[in-house]
Length: 511
Image (tube, rainbow, N blue to C red; front, side):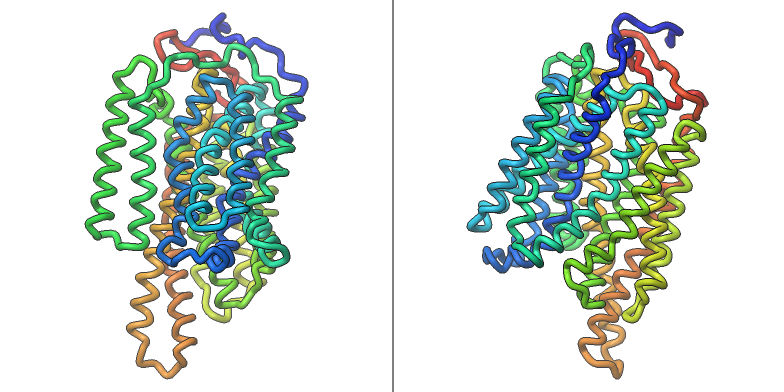
């Protein structure tokens, strides 16, 4: 039952704010940028890497999938390790490991070496991402400061993918595809040095309960199988025996995970983290939004390079309006209004704005004007997603006990990573089917073969983007209905010792 005073079991709540927390934010943000941009920076470099290393078309997708499988499958484990071992220590180990894996990828001499490096990047990314977010959760406890800190973090999380496209284009075109790996090393070195010098984790926030080994195995296998299932659906088809078998296996593994977590004394993922209405709404709505955004990144990249003939660098620069919109939406809209209006009135309209931007992109054709359609669409997408990301990142740890901050942070990363894998596979499959149907039905037309190929391709993209509009509308609906967190400063959330949230100052809890 809630209490009105602070409990002695919550030393982190009573502690004075760390005077170096804003310096710490700089290095945490650098690490987050490295992880997020790595999800897209390799995409633009992939054709060059494939040619250089002789990677087959069948193995090409594994350069992306190996990273997604390891990252998505191990995120909950990484969040639990951060809670148990210490977030600062996990953060530093993640940075060093990610840099080492990147170095291996940069010097790769064959397919196996490159795929192994990508998998290792995913493993250490799964340690790094939740520890970074949970460090912010336990270091920033005052409402306005927390809103500002998470506004910066949310802008990076939202815009990092587009930054990856720009950086990947520049490095690939003017240097070498290997630099899309080597570039991570200075990022990691700066962030690790900063972590050693300025980051101090608040005392009393660790969870020293024994590690839930069955939970680790079931969650890792279940999430990995789910991500792989969507990847196979893209290449083999949704109704292929292998695809269906993977989805069935994923459901069985994840259902078993939930049953185990409900029974073990020290669960990997305490079900109370998911049972709270606001957190559930945040995880679900953000995951859906990422499904739509990742598909859009893929289609717009191909459209600009193949249909419009843009170089990799120009393609990357064409995404700048979206990055500017995300930064503005997160730091100037979301962060400023976070303590003044209910979170649903930021997230819901944010997703609606993004859906309107996506709606503009359904009008793509071969001769679409960048300034007339793509530019305003990107501005709407950026502003909307930036505004929605900020409260989502901040409230991902809403009301959790300090010892659960890592696993709650891992859930927001899991929703993003799994959403990205689903979005790429789902929307790409829809686009491919629509492209084939258009090409078949218009084969007797008078246009040339190349013209028909481009028209069919753009029709496929527009069809898939219509689905993305609907997915964003669903995300907005969930945000409006699930998220009941209000505004009005900092309130203390507390509960009994038997399992639910300890007292942790969190922003905007008065409805």
